[in-house]
Amino acid sequence: MDVLDSVISPLKPSLQIITRNLPSPINNLALSLLGQECTTSIVHNLDLSTSNAVCFKLAISKALGVAIISAASIVKIPQLIKLVNAQSATGLSFLSYVLETASYTVTLAYSVRNGFPFSTFGETAFIAVQDVAIAVLILVYSGKSSQAAAFVAVFAGVLYALFIGDMVDLQTLGYLQACAGLLGLAAKVPQIWTNYSEGSTGQLSAFAVRKVVKDCGK
Image (cartoon, rainbow, N blue to C red; front, side, top):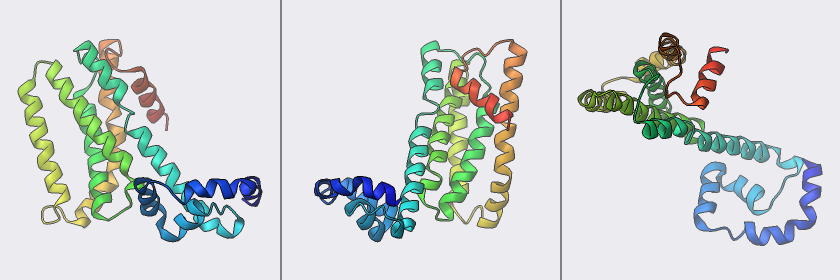
């Protein structure tokens, strides 16, 4: 860290003119992620010395969290685009996306109700939304529009149940969270079986194929 600090040290006076006058949205984002003390030392003062190791590690951790969330916000977009362009759900398993949605939804509810920082679970929210959209399109392109509407209604009801403490208490939600990982792995099985039985990947995107193979290899 001291080496990095010494490298940018000659540039600090010029850079600090920028970092100490950041637009309010950017400055507020830094404050929400790092807190006042670390925002001042890392962002405003560009202090990357060893003595500021705690804030430096926090900044790296938060940066990785934001990067993961950003990637997750578009991870299923290729599949959505392929579905819409083909107007066909051939090769896609509705059950697989339902199970994956259930896994992510439980994790999301558990994280929100326990007050975890958004940077630690934000990717779950984005992926869950994309999974719901894909599941709905699978039904619509399979000629089951009424079932698609029913699925959305059921999903809304599940969200309400998981996020309202009077219906599912934290202890029960904790038990569900313990099973969420297994549910996520189980979600791969219907998709694999669908592709095997049909003899092709159909409208499954190349990115999704790689993800299924990677997850099954864990």
